Amino acid sequence: MPELPEVEVNRQGLIPHVVNKEIAAIRTGSKNLRLPIPRNELQRYVKGSRITAIGRRAKYLVFFLEKAAMIIHLGMSGKLGIFAAGSPPALHDHLIFQLQDGMEMRFNDARRFGFVTIHTPIEIQQQNPFVKLGPEPLALPRLKEIQSEALLQWYNTFTESHHRLTPAYFKNRAGTRLQPIKNFLMDSHVVAGIGNIYASEILFTASILPTTPIGSIAESGWQRIHTAIINILSQAVASGGTTIRDFISSSGQPGYFQLELKAYGRDGTPCTTCRRPIVKSIIAGRATYFCPHCQH
Ligand SMILES: [Zn+2]
Image (cartoon, rainbow, N blue to C red; front, side, top):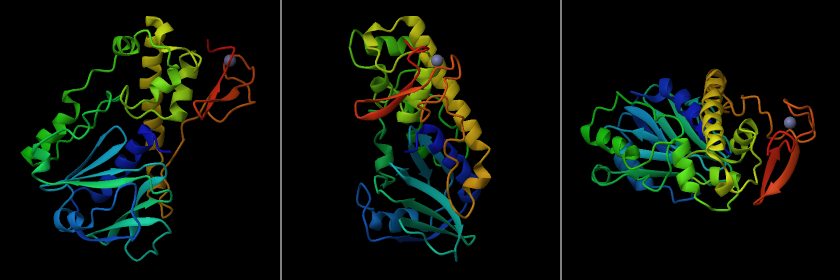
């Protein structure tokens, strides 16, 4: 499942291929995604418009058009790739945006948990669509290319109500609750964009057991968690960034998991710190990897 770094890498990979290009035509498959594909709105607000910028909030990609906007969520298995117009479509290509230069941006999603929404010129004057999301762990992309004042103001609302992500924010939010730290980090209302893989990696680096009740974590623990979040997510974006060329290859596969994982998926292999084996256990239905010796 793409987490924040994979979505950010997908965004960066698309920019040189689609920004400032006009969408000449749109083809949609017959199946719906998590939400129905807004076929009429796509034809009315997206077709014939130029993509002026691509932004992101949490795991949502925001395509700024000339007057409207389109938000794409990749869900469990979605990806956006660039293909030559004549190349055969793949199974599970649900949306094809034909660009004026003969290339196509295709949204492929085998499990169909992704979705597309269109935000009309009237809707963007109203509200922040992400008002319930927690703070962004990395800074949001700065988009100087948005020319419409209304769209720029709308983009600014994405973060206006949210707290800054700090160790104190986590400590306040946790209070005296008994929820395990891993579930807390994966709650998008607490912090945006962290899923199962990076939650394991962050807690390994912060030396904290995934089952630790959040109310018992001291300030120094929150500081280690906060530092680990920033470092691991930015390293993942940077290492994914080196595979952008591969991402644009005909396979359309984004460069997932180029970051060398130290805990996730490594059960039975030696911990990089103490050489004792990494352990796998199921916590709240999700595979969780940790070193019982180094994390406490
Ligand atoms: Zn260890």
